[in-house]
Length: 205
Image 1 (cartoon, helix red, strand yellow):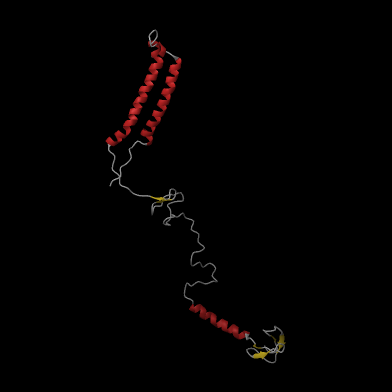
Image 2 (cartoon, rainbow, N blue to C red; image 1 turned 45 degrees about the horizontal axis):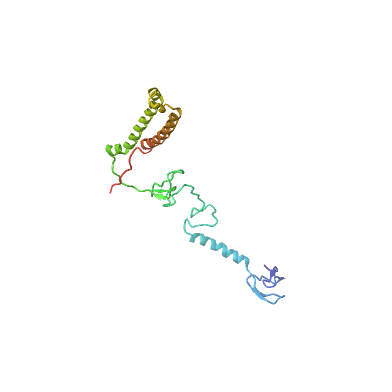
């Protein structure tokens, strides 16, 4: 560095010194501030000597900022599998609504429970279906009665004191009323025989 320009760190002005001033303390001729001229070669040698020591001191598998692909916390991995909001376990499928681990229902937000129930006997099933059978029998009787009234009664009351039963308006209103009764009774039978064919189960104590 003999004869090379030196920059004052205080006033930032350049000046030339005599001889090799690296590592020596000099005074700026402009601002009169004393400072030590940096020795760049010595600093480079110190950094070069320290790098192998750092590599040797670093344990195997340690995080290296220069290794861009190294991900110790798996922050780059994206787990898109559906999980239970209650126990965080993986759901059986994307369309599953009930967790197989804790029984949580994601739609009703309730937990499934297991209960012991008593078995149903044929007698209990028959008693449960008995009202439906009775209503069905009444429907059959009502249909037969309407047919009898509309087809046979008119020929039997001709010339008698029950002649007033042979009226088109009466037959029409009886038929309309009977159809409403048959419809309501049929809905009851449909519910009892198809929607609720078994009585409610009794929980075991």
